[in-house]
Length: 182
Image 1: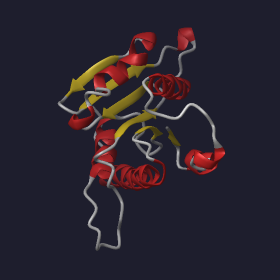
Image 2: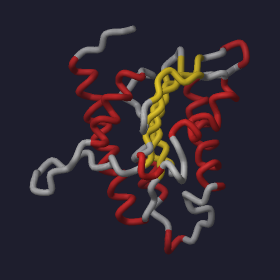
Image 3: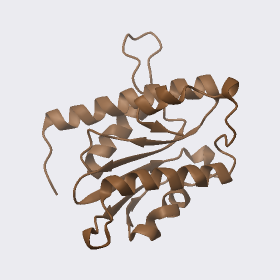
Image 4: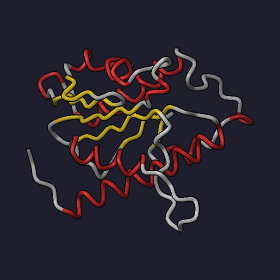
């Protein structure tokens, strides 16, 4: 298990905090409660993804200047790829489990990619999917496919909008720029 520098951990936590702030804002603007997020600073590591999730879920002090975090009440799947694996951490607050559990959400595509759950808690699941170069399964490509499959899964459950009523949609360019797919 690699040791990460304080700088790498800080970058992951900061990225998570910024994404959490974005997710919370999108929820407030459009009511979306479930997200797939590509994490660039987490280097395909579950440890760094955990730091990012902690940053996203931190309680926001309404009086503070720094408003990062605030997404603890939302369902989210953070995905990060390196050359060897796709790392996934899925968090769904317990009060949302009657709609979807983190394990149910992750298992949508784990079997397709020979992935495995490596840790499971009350409101989260951590999983990895190894690269399979012989079958042209590359982590970065799998990350994008997993996000698409997850979106389809959420759409079937009625958790994301399927129609594209422009008056009722959030700015797709802004979502893409933030690395967020809902």
